[in-house]
Length: 332
Image (tube, rainbow, N blue to C red):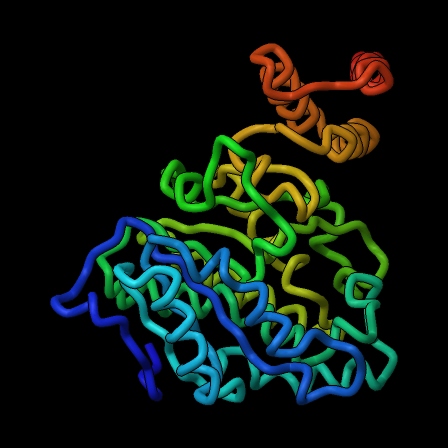
């Protein structure tokens, strides 16, 4: 792991242990780009949810931001194992791809999955592509002897909150598997695996890049598979966001994965089962039915019905009607 000006909380001497290590990063993309991208003060005002975790936390950030993040972490979780690692953005694992991504975009090769010209900049793509490798770097060293490693965007709590009877730390601790991811869109890999333009016009899976977890013994495989997809995407000349590439990797590793489903707002609320945003799950279910993905549709039905039966997912009258319509479609 890079050691350029790293800072460790005093409680790490002697070395602390933690069954979970949360990994995050903060870089100043706003100062590098024109436009209205969120700046560092915006993130520093909204990162308390992640910085207050009692799990071990490692944050990669630019050297000039180390002191500020370290101070905030010490205020919020003074006894928690911590490393704030100063790493210039140019040294992030996929920052080397920025020039090639820029050339593709300048040539008009910007796929619909990276169509937001303000947000989906070459540097933003490179940052997203760096997440799995940063996670793997931490897992390889495993400074806190953790069994699992979670990537969390540093301002995750600005968008997603757990339900009142849950907590961020408790949810991460409750998971025990090889790979956890949240599916935003549901698509079979066979529909896009041989696309000559690589996601430029074909359907795609999409997995939330703001929160995903891997076990200690699976982190390197996960990062290697992601790097392969990023390289393949770059070679195709149609670079796209990390959430699409994560979708490909998760689909390839589906047998080892535990999946949640929902929009970004329910990354924590729907962590273990559908609790909110039934409309989103119905949309995925309808998509699976229309595409003939019978096994996936059956899994959606089972999880939805279990959550309804145990009283943890409430449906409106219209949603009950829609569910019955989906049952008829699935059986036809």
